[in-house]
Length: 357
Image (cartoon, rainbow, N blue to C red; front, side, top):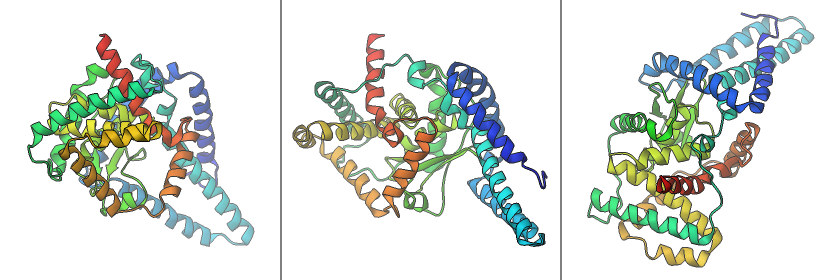
């Protein structure tokens, strides 16, 4: 199909042009794409390939190898270096154009939608030391109550709900809390465990949304207390939340408002770790003082998570961070990987909004 043509290159360029226009008109992008076109794409994925019991990334990979096989076959049929060179260049640029086109059409235009914080009338800002400490003490108090509800044992929690049940539970919580967020989430997205175990973490990834198949994946070796929040984060991406900080925020809201205590604990624990990290850079003396006041059970859980992360180290954490930072910035996320840490500010704004209401 489209043999000896530049069709995919042209479609890729058109998609990039639409992206530029979409970035100028986020309100229109929100209405036309994020709330109209994308939900249709979301549901089409969910009623088709997402029903397969394995990560459909493998199908994508198979397709890539098939295309590569076709390329080699046609390349060998070309006579003369010039024709082979021209065919190679055209094929490569067409392939890039095809990737760009489907990435943007299937999901990428969500980067140009109205920010979720703006839709929810939140006004996130940097917290001063007093505000941050108040937030930390609040989260710490919530964690203490939740953990006592889960178990009286102070040993690290390392066994939770079986994964299929956990995935269904998180998805159900997202649908149950739509009224809190005012967003038009629709569909039945999957967040599957990606095998072989540890592969994603070797790449410096805990979870990832793959737009070309409409699925998200997490590494099965993640600590049990990290899985609920990570699933919620990746499902937020599946529902069209592209910004990493906002996906963190949606994941936290979903977990925090869950009827399941374990989900609440997972979400609040992730927020707590972000808050502690912020405090570390503001006032290390207060940071070490506060660490000494954390309940033994919570300390053991955090230590267990750190130990779990150290067991499988990325091949190159710096390369992974730099590539992710570059990708996010090319999509219009100015903060890059620092956008993940927006959770502290968004959670503060959300709590204040609820307090005012």
